[in-house]
Length: 194
Image 1 (cartoon, rainbow, N blue to C red):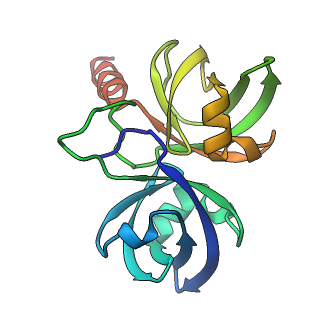
Image 2 (image 1 turned 135 degrees about the vertical axis):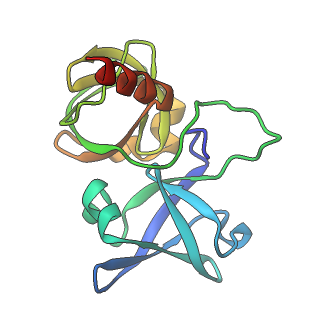
Image 3 (image 1 turned 60 degrees about the vertical axis):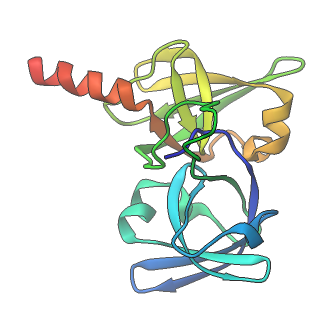
């Protein structure tokens, strides 16, 4: 379980394919605190640490993960938003995030708002967003500003822009989305009744 509050940026150091699996080697400021079998969200995608050595660690993504996320777009040097799993005695600063990516979205617009930035995303799934509701974009818990069918926007403050990978996002880039878990349950209940 995660909160969507990005703890730091990781950098991809190596990518190795083994059958349908892909092993990613990364480094980050807290690598030496990581343990094997630990869950760690990478752009919102929960991956298990399978190896640590010095200031690098390795996670493995299976075929399903590669097809449902933007991990296939990573290359050596890619910056990745990281969050360790939530401690049960801590504050829930973002919202309840599972680390299970629902789909990807395309960034279709970036608007400089003289001190903040408005990012607009388009996706292709039946999931919904609501204005002032929560959504996770590349593992970052955000508040929805505008909501339309299969499209929404969020505003990014300077701190989030600098300390997450939003500062390198461009129009046309793919991002990972996790929709609000409560909203997903409500939407599923309504679909059953229809």
